[in-house]
Length: 391
Image 1 (cartoon, helix red, strand yellow):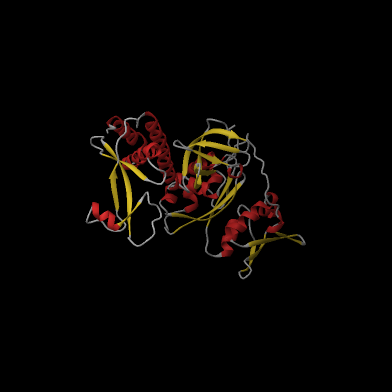
Image 2 (cartoon, rainbow, N blue to C red):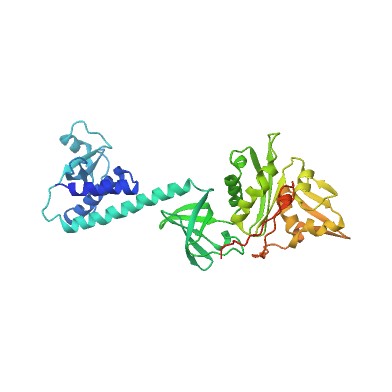
């Protein structure tokens, strides 16, 4: 029997889908065997086709597993004792397979071919799914450019090319607007294999999204000449990021800002109204806390290393800056430094735990505020509000 007419189609599938030809051939052999067993065999028989890839000729065989003579047969349709197998092939041994050629039936035509076709399609889908899964598994933690395909309530379906990804509400930047057809960068946060295919979770609110933007826009971060030591983010509102370098000639904060703020503005353009504080990392916890409290000026820091707690003294006119709106500044500074920060406020003590959590931050779509002088100051708030936000 010949399937030479299938070989051209197989080669086309291999070229177009990037699937291993061996996978396609094995799927076809299994499919033809399954179709034959359905019409002419028995359910527990092992039947497959053996295809000559050069000529397209194939034959159908029944397969037997060779077992010890003194054990119980579990499947007499697919097992054979060693003594009986040796009558067919003297060199056979336990664990080997022996085949028996089956007759071809003229009726083995349209119905069987259709069955084979369905199985092939299923196997090809599985192979394609595995390819997509592997491709995006390798992209976990990376940024990709993609297009919004559909908006379903709080969930956004994003076209990634070979497949779709999901950006749930929890992974979106609060206050950001999305529209179908909009192209944007997203972080491949997590990839899972499910019965329905790869499940790809995308994010724009994750802290790593900002880290990857810095790698994209700041070559020194990508090359690891500048290291991002810590990051604390409340997406849509503010991010603090601490940077360091071992190269004496390199200014890590200035390099991240870029000439006339070009680099940081490219990052801000991607995340809309979110503010970014770039601070200098310091191995001394006191200095790090001072830096992380930027833009507030700090008078004194008292540490309790054992309790990982710090009391920060600030001038009265710096209290609101130090605490921040809804306690945000002290909250982010605590995460950067790893210390619980308390700030004396009159006869009271403002604690990080006093700050409201899970705030919904408002944004202003109509203002732009980022001067080149401000952008070039170390430890100063870097802010740009853009009116090019997606609507």
